[in-house]
Image (cartoon, rainbow, N blue to C red; front, side, top):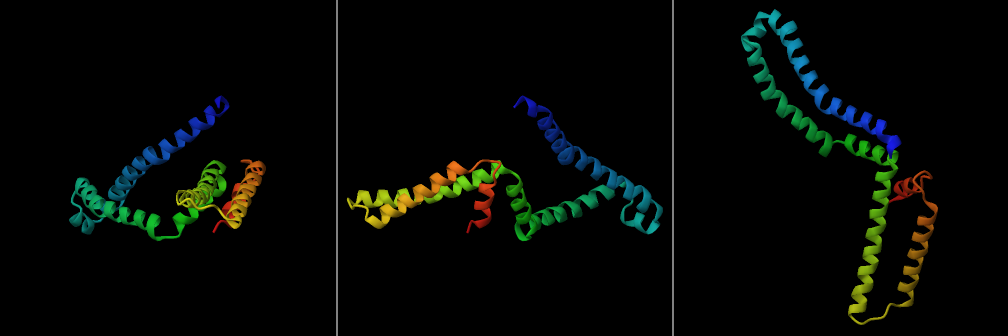
Length: 162
């Protein structure tokens, strides 16, 4: 873990820079440049934006809701975020492992729930159910014994997952 400290610091630096500093700096820079290079030199635009303060208020009132709508569309309505998420899972073996583990947990929980329901009704499991449980156990055991974070077994599961 100690050897990862410089990389973790680099990650935190990039997140702080990209998420906060660069965003604020870019917004101030864009507002300043567009006003003083474009609007200040065109009297027709100065009628709409008589001062830099008015320009900031008007652009904020229009820009913020517009950018919120664009962000909403990106996350909820477009295919681009789904593609990003897929790439993130494919490239991050730890997140992918969590996803695969949760899928197997759902399958196992469902089987256990079926068994408990039958047993509480004082019914015995039939041979077919016992065979299914043994098959699931064998499949899970082989998967757990063969997979590592490096060997891409989780990625194979993810790509064939229905």
